[in-house]
Length: 373
Image (cartoon, rainbow, N blue to C red; front, side):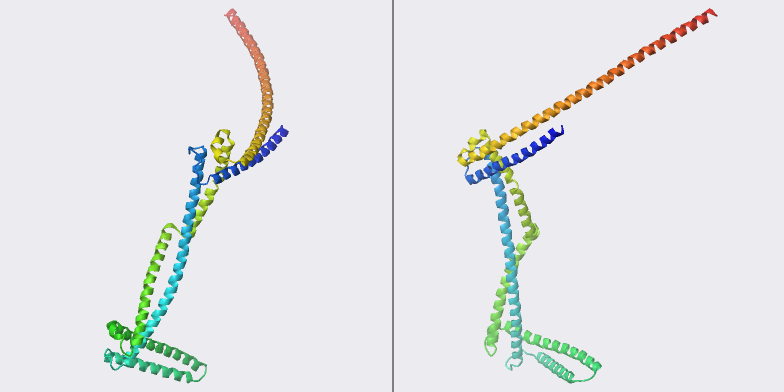
């Protein structure tokens, strides 16, 4: 029994290996047939189970892959564009910052010149007094810093000196900043109030430069607005549908899943060519070399059938032996039951005799009682 089961396992292993080899042949044939078809429509029917029906399934899977690849390319293009936008925005922000600083310096220079221009009447006494106060404070702090730098002494004197210098430098910077802001505001006001007249006179060159810088800033601001709008639009789309990398990974997984369905489809198509009843429908796309593949598949199929028959025969023999064993077991059970029946029959006879003896004794006792009434 064990030897026969071992034989079955060996045959099953051979069968599995041969089935795999046969499927590989038919799978390769099916793939080759699909490639030969290309975009043609060689079949009259596309009903399920027909070559045309399998071709429809194949093209549906291909379309899923193509659509997913198109979406991935679109996402990658948008990601690249987003990177380009970030670079362009960064460059324009830097240029804008540089021009704003240059414009501020130009305004400051014009404003300072206007304070010194006796022909310009836009400077009030209050403004002039404010300038003089700031200049005086700046001079005082510069002198104080100079004196502090010359001061000598021990460690404690050095610490006190540093603290005083820090305070003086802070005040000096604040006053200089206030003075520059005063000049800048005057320069800005001068150009804003009379832009046409401002380009005439001693400040003409500086004013022309200001107008040039302002035009550049306006152009850059317009560019930045457009670039940021495009970036925002792409960002909003990504935000609504998920990050680009995650979406791309999702489509790549889908493509891998779809590709995993092709081998089974190739096998089904190749199996149709193996079927004599379906082969006629495929005749227009089959070649002579396909006959060799089909003959090899036929040989493997015959081997599989032979091994399946051998397996069934061994299993039948095992089943026969099992049935014989069951029959013997049943016969022994019947014999045991018959023996039990015989023993039960004898027990019944003995019990009936016991009953008869008891009845006879009763009768005797009744007779005794009757005689002695």
